[in-house]
Length: 169
Ligand SMILES: Nc1ncnc2c1ncn2[C@@H]1O[C@H](COP(=O)(O)OP(=O)(O)O)[C@@H](O)[C@H]1O
Ligand SMILES: [Mg+2]
Image (cartoon, rainbow, N blue to C red; front, side, top):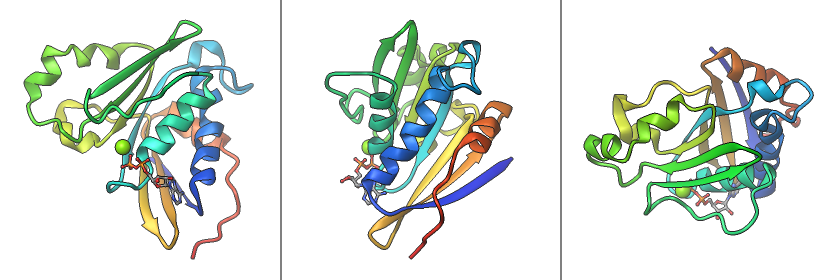
């Protein structure tokens, strides 16, 4: 397990972090070939911590155009670009694990897709560990971010990230 911490002073910093990860997940980064594309990120943090901001920025930086809705009502929003599936989920309102089975959510975890999940803790043990956990915490006017990798792919993402200098409040 590898963890990196950084301070995101404003939303632009959150967007910049997502924009660095996007090419790695899309397989267009020099260090990540087409066959390595896809991956799962779990987003943790209180309401307003920036989970949706991060997910939206990652989708945007991946080339998705048009409206990117928060999946807080529909549970899931999906996109496809260059033959790659993107799933943005939000389990805030998730209460019944049958919803999970009924909606066939399980299948998307086996796909070579980009999967971003807000409030993964609401799904309890239904979710396997992601490649990367991102914890966002209010800190002064910005956010502390803690990134923990659980797979070799996630570790490679973290070592490839060019992190800005730390200027925590
Ligand atoms: N690093 C940051 N520092 C300060 N504000 C941020 C940062 N990242 C995002 N925000 C702001 O915080 C709010 C996050 O909202 P949202 O992304 O919907 O949160 P969540 O999905 O975690 O509930 C937005 O108003 C956004 O502009
Ligand atoms: Mg949200």
